[in-house]
Picture 1 (cartoon, one colour):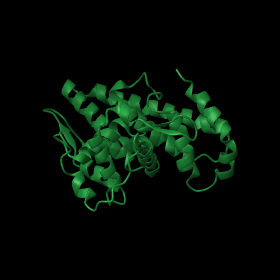
Picture 2 (picture 1 turned 60 degrees about the vertical axis):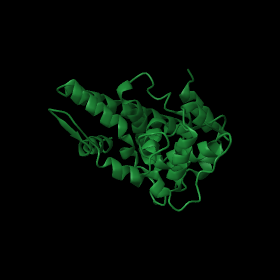
Picture 3 (picture 1 turned 30 degrees about the vertical axis):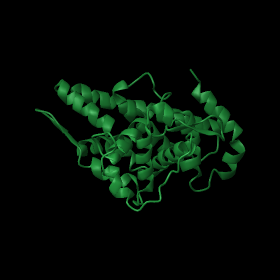
Picture 4 (picture 1 turned 90 degrees about the horizontal axis):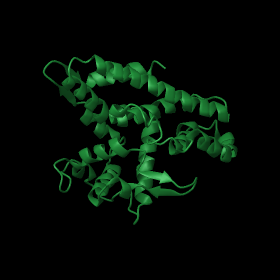
Length: 264
């Protein structure tokens, strides 16, 4: 398997002049540097052999923690940057270990399944509070559409994109916005990839994303909401999971992560 730490070290070394020049500028650390790390530390490489019940959540957690740590770096030094990436991985492990402990204490299988489903299906709610990570996901989606073969426009010049998002997707029993949530939950941040520092390639064909799915993604990018993820957040605020003995609500989910993310 690729040694991602060495690949990151190589990438930073190649870009050190740029990093040093712009390190203290607003948004450089919170966007350019974080994107540089995430382009290498992709979902298939981060804790790939652990926490299978939290597949989507573990990468979301890593991205959020990484963003917090990178933004606080004060010294432009390759070892400091790599050290913070490794610390983000360790913190992610600590959070997921704690969540596994919560699951193991639930009284029955139904409760555990409800907990796992809630964690897996609603992690975009957590992302909706972190603009840096959201910017990375949106940038990844736009790059995937632009580099698709054939290329497709990221945005559509239509006035009713918001309404169309809540119509049913073609040949599906769910709305287009629900399909967008599915795609971004499973593949957000992995819809495109870099062959080298300058060349970006679409990953859409490899992810079983249909032309109609692409249309739904275009509608999402064309929505008039200033914060596109507000639609997702509003929908997910109403999500709850119940079984006969225990209720796990979305507020429970939010409280769990509020506790974890402000403890490190």
